[in-house]
Structures are given as structure tokens and as C-alpha cells.
Amino acid sequence: MLLRSSIVLYFVIAFEVLIMISPFAGFFYSAFNPVLLKLASSSSTRWLSAFYLPHMVLPDDWFLQFVRVMGSILLVIGMLVFFICAGQVYTAKFRNKGTVLAGLYSFIRHPQYVALGIAGLGLSILWPRFLTLVLWLIMALVYYILAKDEERRMINAHAETYRPYMEKTGMFLPKRIEQAITPSTRIGKIILSFCLALCVMGTGFMLRAYTINHLILWTKSANVTGIAILPEDGFKMEHRMGDILALKEVRERMQDSKKYLVYFIPRDYIMQGMIADTGGDWKLFNQHASMTMITDWVLHPFRHLREGHHDMHHEGSIQHEINAGAENLVVRRLIFLSIEEVAVKTPSDLFAINALRVPQFMVDVDVHTMQLLQVKDLPHGSGWGTVPTPAF
Image (cartoon, rainbow, N blue to C red; front, side, top):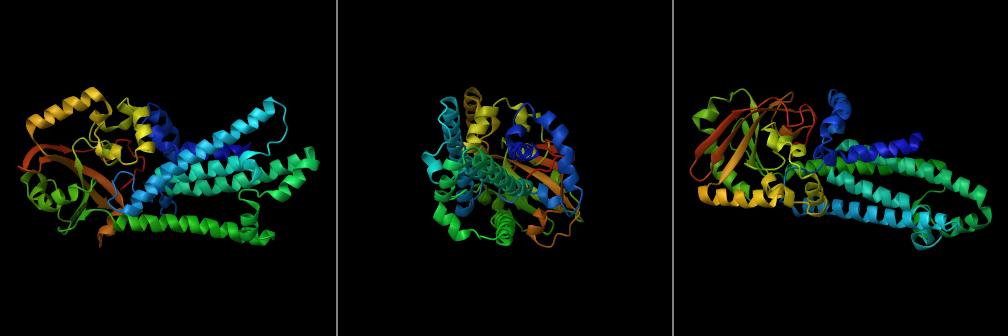
């Protein structure tokens, strides 16, 4: 029971991103937020609540785009294979046909666990907290223990048919491949498991470093760094950030002794609530389009990053386009966050795991005319309060 509960826990945490855009967000975080806050309270565990791939930023790099698309593919394929195999098993049970040995089961003995592992890896890419990656490794270990237990029970119940079947098939991979890469001794298997865990976690940290190195940044100020959410906004940010920082309403809210990270985003950017609490409209669970966003999140990995919440509803989208055309404005919202608890010597330090990013204020500016449309001081938290959210 404990083993199966750990699997359920993994998928609850991995599906955190789905819960965030659902009406159940408040209930979920009332229970889960203390766990994340506890992890974030210590420098030794803070990395578990950090992200290792872009989630809010639309990557301009082909490799990061490929990884994100692969996350969706792995999730869909994994769940599809799982349900196909589950259908085989339960059909055989209902018809009293005994052990399932056909289909994928003719090559490997536990395709359902393999499918769930593939889907779990896809989820780890779609919601890339290090905690999700660690729990995926724990889930893989749990699947191995469950598989060994199931095989023991099958041998006891069907020794005549199951032993020959085991000799022809692999546990999680085809027999020949599994024999080639799996050590025969217990110590060898432990070493292999350790190497797998090291490889998975090492890849996570390398992907995080790679992501930070490929963010679109503006670094022409001594104490301000800008980050563009959309690749096409890099040009606008490059040419207008200096002028925006020179505005009186911006200068009087900044301190020369502080370092600032400034998010350069469309005014209706749908995920801005993860950066700061810019208003109730930008808390995803308030937008009443959960299923639409979930579908886009999986099947259209980048489209939701380009759309405002108005675009999730047909009527709102039309009205938004009419208003935008009438005003003929190119408005960008700049969210200013101060960086605390770390010494900022390079732009990458702004995204350090131990860095505390505190929202200060935001401005809406027409980047063509430099007309300042709105200035607003912000509470020191995101749209989800104190829940650790992505930095990129």
C-alpha cells in the first residue's frame, strides 16, 4: 500500500501545473504549500523546488523547443500505451483467459510500468521541478519492487506457464537488450541504479544551466537585467529598455544599491501571475478555461505562452483584437523584481537557486510612443502567494 501511495504522490505533484489552473488550486496549496516552503527554507533542499527547464519563457533555442515537444510526446504515448495494456489485462480477467502474453507482453513482462515511467518522464519535462525529477526516480524504484513482487506471486500461482515466459522476455526491456545492459549481480544492479540516478539528476542541472545561458536578456545597466518572455520581444527590449528605465515614475521607485530582474512581457501574458500578483485576472484558476489551457499545454506546447486569457474565449478574443486595432498600441508590461540573498556578479546569478526574487512594481508602456499607461506597486509574492514558482 505504501509503495502504491508513493506512485500516487508522484502524479499529484507532477500534475501540480494542472491543479494550478483549476478551481481546486486553493485547496491543493493549503496542503502542499507547507511542503514546498519547507524545502525552500533550507539552502540544502531549496533546489528541489527549483525548475530546470523553461516553463514561462518561450525558448528561442531549437534544442529547448525539442525537449519541450518531447515532453508532450512522451506523456501522450506513455498514457496511450498504459491504457492499451490495461485494456488487455482487464479484458483477459473478465473473460477468464488467464495471464496476458500477447501484444507488448510478448516482449516485456511489465509494459504498463514502462508506459507509466515514460509518461512520468514526459510530465517531468512539462512541469520541470527538481522535486518531480527526484520523485520520478523513486517511482522507478517502486515499479521495480512492485514488478518483482508480482512476478513472485505469478510464479507461485502459474509456475508451469510463467517461468518459461520469464525466460523469453525481459522485465522492462526486450530480453537481449536487458541482458546486455543489466549486471547479473546484486552489487552490479545497485551500481547501475546509482549511475542512472546520477545521470538523471546531472542532466537536470545541465539543462538548467543550458536554459539560463539561452535566455533573452538585456544587460546594459549596472543594476538592472531585463528578460524577454517572447523571442520577438528581444528587439523591442534591446531598443526601449534604457528609455523605460529613464522614466521619472520608474527611477523614483528604484534604488541604486539593489539589483533588479525585469520581466518584459505582453500586457495580457497569461502566466504573469507566476511572476507577481498583478491582479486577479492573472491567477490562472480564475480564468474559467481550465480544460482549454490543459489541452493547449499538452498538445500545443508554445501557443498558450503567446495568448492572453482573452484569447481562451472566442468572444473575448474578437473584442481584444478590435480594441487593439482601435488603439494601435504596442504595449508591454515590465514587472520589476529585486534580487535578494545572493551576490549578483553575473546575469546568471539572478536565476540562482538560492536567489530570492521579490516583486516591487510594474509599468505598462507603449513601446512605440513611450507613453506610460500604468504604474502599480506590487505585493511581495506571486499570484499564488509564497508558493515557489518558475523564474523562467
